[in-house]
Image (cartoon, rainbow, N blue to C red; front, side, top):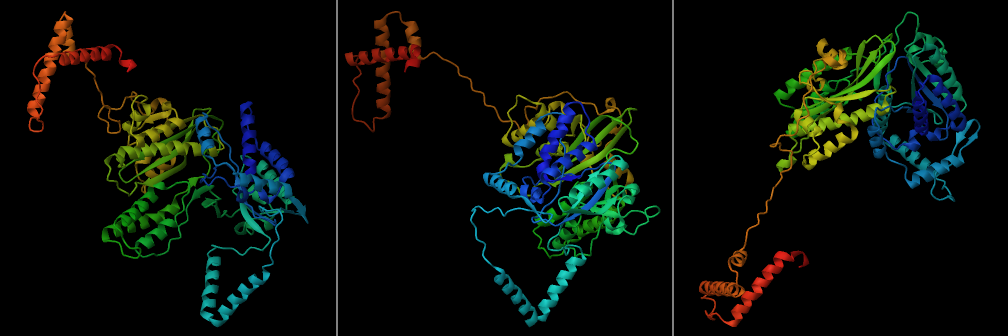
Length: 626
């Protein structure tokens, strides 16, 4: 079900506390929590409009019994009900990483919450809150006259130009008929509320308790729909969804319902698609319009949709105009994709991860597969259950796919090669695992990451090599959010992230939605793992190491010192060498100097030799004192 945003952290703490004490979270714990919070603050100010600090896309929960309702109420401030989630991880690393990335409230946000909390009061059965102005003494101007003036101006414009009035009216009727907009009373706001339960009796009780609790804050829960006929019969017909008000629940099938952007086929309790594609021209604008109409937030059909993204990228690469017809080659690919698009409605994926009658789960694992090519990369995640009888069931959780960046660089070391794309896919896998573990209301015992790139595994396993910045940054994310023991090798043939799917091929669809065959078998039959190899010396991602060796050689002065045992002879020998050097320099620079060197051994030269020998000895034995 959905809870006000401010209740998320409180509910998470309660769940963690119950599990740490060895207990199991039951639905009555949630009902008790909702009752307590409703008594404290059943007001619209705690919706996500006031407290939104995270815009991440969340996977929709899949559980056994589904209930959906629409809330209708009359508050003094707008609100949304957001989904309650519990966080279960097998290690603290993903949780800590998510906490670091979460945005905290600013000082102004805290001041806003203080004003809201202190000013809440109830008037005529509705909650009222003061407007959060920075200044306390604010005099609101009377702008009713300006509003009326604008309305009169628009009316005058319609009177003078009937065509504008006609177009305006047609436009409004069009968006209302297509349900892009809805006429809502001025004092009424609406949003969806979703809940699930394993037991029909508990679901019936939940409907009654939620209706009673929300009515205390002037919330009216209506438009109920459930995949259980027992639950639907417990709800008054006038409070049911429009399509089931006059439905005979004993013999007629339940309709489909759009739940948070995903189509829920209530009768079969599956998720799927409804394609309403109109005929569009074979241009970049037309192709983009059709592709954008396919909404797949969970990535249930990501490999199929990736084809259309690659097609659009190629059109952009060719710098096609928005309304320019595409060439015959692209047109052929596009028409084939449109033909396959109609088959998408035939694919239904079970809403529940665990099938009915599966029994007590003894092991729950999360498996994420990553792969990349020169045109794109992707990640797909599966949940794997094992029951008391050693029976195994796997289900698709979500997937993500990305096209390869189009921008090229002139710097070779910055090019996004296939190995780097593989590493980028592995980074996406650990980030997606953190999201899934945070959102799933299922305790996951172990998480495994699979890749068919030995280059990626070598980089992850290595602890000594110094990688280039691009690789080092991604390895840091992977090591922060996972352990090296969680990483496994899988062949490209068995990697579901490495292959596309044909919508008319039932075997490929089962392989995609259920995961590779080896996941359905005992772990001793999983792919053979290779030893944790180090990166090869010629790996382009390794930083080049330059080795410098310093070899000490005896200078000519050391040779002379060791040769002569007499100070006088040593000094004279060095003096003659000094004279020889000076004479050679003069002969080289004779054109630039007219001064002649006196090639005789005098006192000055002997003193210069003595000074040179003393300096050499000081350098050899007292270099640190210089």
